Length: 231
Image (cartoon, rainbow, N blue to C red; front, side):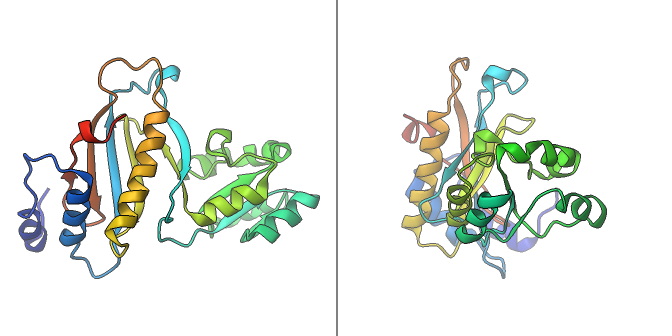
């Protein structure tokens, strides 16, 4: 893949053969972010899991102490009192069956997260082929299928992120923006790593976290010293 001159020059700041500690990596990522927009700081974790086996899956959610720096729009499928609770908690959109044709026929996706009460999953299930590929399908493990819709909405607005293995057994998640103070990025990163370590499947043998890389949206990857961040 051919890189631009700016990227190549910036990448020279990173020693490909060095494994950095978290503070050094965060400082480097911030220094290497050269885009004209506020880049997202991302973490890429290569695991020793084999996602083809159900007992080696990783999926969950964690509330980052300082949020992601992104305004999150939340859609809630609920009725009655739960609809009222969701609106009071700050949900951007709340509804039930009437939203199905709007999503199916009008390609309506003016939201970033979807929450549903358990009794609404029969309705939401009809949208599986549309919401699923976009990572929007509510899931109990992520806390987005719940009767406590107020808590779910508040946590998502505060910076709750989901993590899960991709087909290559890697976890990709945002932990903030380049404009965040270094300390806040470090604390968000630590909250994520603690959650990932806690979610280690018992069936995984050998190294659990094989490599951890930090980068900004347009910047080079900075590899971390895994032995310093695992429990």
